[in-house]
Structure formats: structure tokens, C-alpha cells
Length: 434
Ligand code: S3P
Image 1 (cartoon, rainbow, N blue to C red):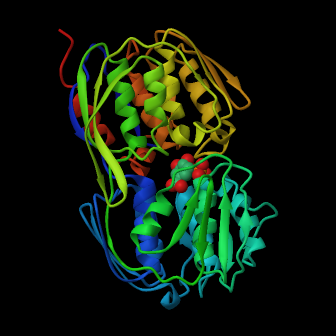
Image 2 (cartoon, helix red, strand yellow):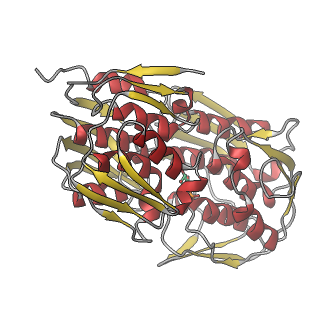
């Protein structure tokens, strides 16, 4: 198991980072580029392990995919020409790959078995399998619970009108993708608006969809068109450096080309409520997705309450690093209505509380969140990532406010979403406080 010891006492956080491509958008570029007929190109694709797994899966289905640096070329004869794979489709650690793939394959002409790593194989798949069954999908589990491995036998689907019981972009996207192959109009109503990259990209690929408030509808039988996709930087990756710059003892840092889709920017609202200084410049939009540069300055922070159901999906992946931020803020930070954290790559409530408390933080675990009492000074020590990329990166950033080095156990997982993370951390922590 790969372990890294991080010494970041008495350093400033400054300089500039170009944030790598967005994971959610990169997955969807491969998926839609494979569904349509023709040649799709993507730039600034994230070459993290999750997205590389997605690319490999579509190659197994017969799609030609070439990745050179962060440029991708996808050449497909369209979903109707896919071939059943000779091997199981391995999603690795990626919940997005597994859940969206279930929706895509449900109405396709192929049969395939979907597998994942030890962590993904424990995560719930019923949230997509049950609505897909309502559409007439044939998805079989080897075990009693609806978890991977799952075998999908593609067949004709009927449309549904569905309200997922959890606010989940993965569930919404799986149903919309299945809806593309169904014999009428499929409608998804959301409890709270979740990330809408699927909808934006469907439009980019010339599929007609209808969106009104919390409802999205899609008509089956559309063919779409190959296109060019520009992937903005991933705000979920930027989050680690936003927090690094805010909790550092000094410095100002610039993060370039960060995606600013408002279904993802909850962290910026929370940082503002906590008194953090973040300025956005050079705002622009590329191929349907807004982005800009962030300038972040070390700040005095105060606690806040994060419990609004509409806010939760806008920052769900950022809550571990927000929890670290809150340990450095004065007063209480309350996080509630976040029980989804328990079914992410690991149980992120237990992982965050146990790992940061071991360094001297004061975090109470709640069934659906945590209460963080700040400010607390942290000690050097050990953080176990539990194989979860976002817990590993949180541990490394904690080294900025700990009084000694932090040893992060199992760092290989960080390549799932941010292969350049340690290189970037090194780059912005070169100047000392003196
Ligand atoms: C994702 C949606 C979110 C998020 C995940 C990526 C996506 O999951 O946590 O990291 O790309 O659609 P849920 O939609 O299940 O909340």
C-alpha cells in the first residue's frame, strides 16, 4: 500500500494551478460520444482512473477511443452497432460509470456483466435498477442485494415518469439515458436540483430535452449528432486547493479554468458564509458549461450551518474538505441532511470524523452529518484514506495546519480523480513563511 508523508509546516500557499478536467463531464463525453454515430472530440478530458475505466468499457463495446494527453477522439458506429463484450465491464471505483452504464445498456442491443472494485461492489445499485426495471429492463444480480456484479440484457424499454427518492444526478442520468432508447417520453422529477451535466451535454449532442424547474423530459428514439466537447476544470478537485489557500497562514493562489456550473458551486456559497475570500475573474462559457478563474486568499473563518436540502447536491463531494475547513473556523459548523455521504466511495461521515479527530479535531458524528467545533489546532499523525480519493486529499491538505507531518495511508486512490494532485500541492507550497 502506497503511503506518503507530507510536511507543510510554515509554508505559504501561493502561485497558480490549472485545474484538471471535470470528472462528471469527462465520463459523459465518452458515453454520449459512444452512443451517437460519428466522430466526437473532447479537450481537457480528465485522465483520472475513473474516466479511463469508462473509456475502456466503451472500447470493449466496439467503440474506437483514442486518448492523447487530455485530447480524446471517439469514433462510433452508434449504439445499435455495439457488440456484446467478451469480458465483464470493469468500472473500478466509479459509481458514475456503473450507474450511468446500467441506464445506457438497459435499452441497448447487447448483454454485458458490470463489475467494480471492492468498494464499488458494496455501493447501492437499487436506486437505478428499480426504476430501470419499471421501464422493462432486464438486470440480474448474482447476490440477493442489488449490488455489482450485475448482468444487463438489453431490450425494448417503455418510458416512465419517476421521482427518485434521493436527489442523485447519477439516478437522473441513468433514467434519461435509458429514456433515449424507450418508446415514448420519459420524465424525471427531482426533489432538489442535482448536477445537470447530462442535460447540457445531451443538448450539445443535438438531442432535444425539455427542462422545467425540477423536471426533465426526453423523447426516445432520437439519434443525436457527434460534436466537440470542452471539459472545464473540476470544481470538486479545485475544492482541495480552495481550502488549502483559505486555511494557510498566508498567501494568495489562483485556480484557472474552474467549472462554475451553479449545480456544483455550493462550496463557494459556504466559503462566503464562513468569511473566506474568493474572487472570480475571467468568467466565460464553453460548449454549454460556465467556468472562470478563482483567486483565493488566506482568511479568518467562522462556523456556519449547512443543511438546506437544495444546497446538499451542490456540494456533496466537497463536504470532507469543507469539514477540514470548519476545524479551522471559529465556532460551530453544523452539517445535516447529508446521509448520502455514508454511501459514497467510503462512509465519508465516519471517515472524516474519525481521521480528523485522531489529529485533535473536535467533530461529533451525526447519522446524517456532523458538528464540527472550531477552531482546533491539529497534530501531525496518520490519516487513512480508506481507499477514498477525497479522504486521502483531505488528509494531505490537513498537513498545512498540523504541527507535524501527516502520513497519508493508501494514496494511490488519489489518481481516481486527480492524478496530478501531489505535483500541484508541491508547486503551491514552495515558499516559506519567513
Ligand atoms: C456524480 C453525481 C454525484 C457525485 C458523484 C458524481 C455524477 O453522485 O457524488 O461524485 O457524475 O453524476 P449522486 O448523483 O449519486 O449524488
